[in-house]
Length: 104
Image (cartoon, rainbow, N blue to C red):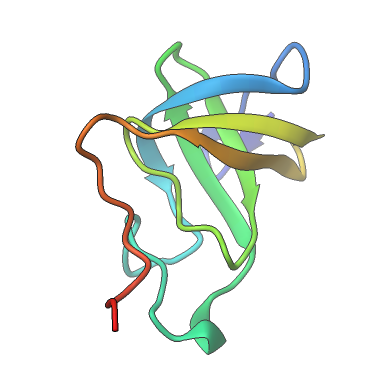
């Protein structure tokens, strides 16, 4: 399956764990690595990632999730290549920081 000229792969079984090698495109056009600070600007949408085993996957991310980042381990919990895979964060690389905005 293709999306914007990118071949989208499917996974053999759900649930499964994958590790992110690169973010190809983000649902937030202005930054692939950050979600907006304002809750009103956070949206659900598709993020396309390359996994460490060479698969290109479309993820269906909700507005509460940060866009995935290089080195993250995620678990695909449902979905398909066309509508996107639902996912949850499983692991972070050592020393990684997750930005959720300023701490007050």
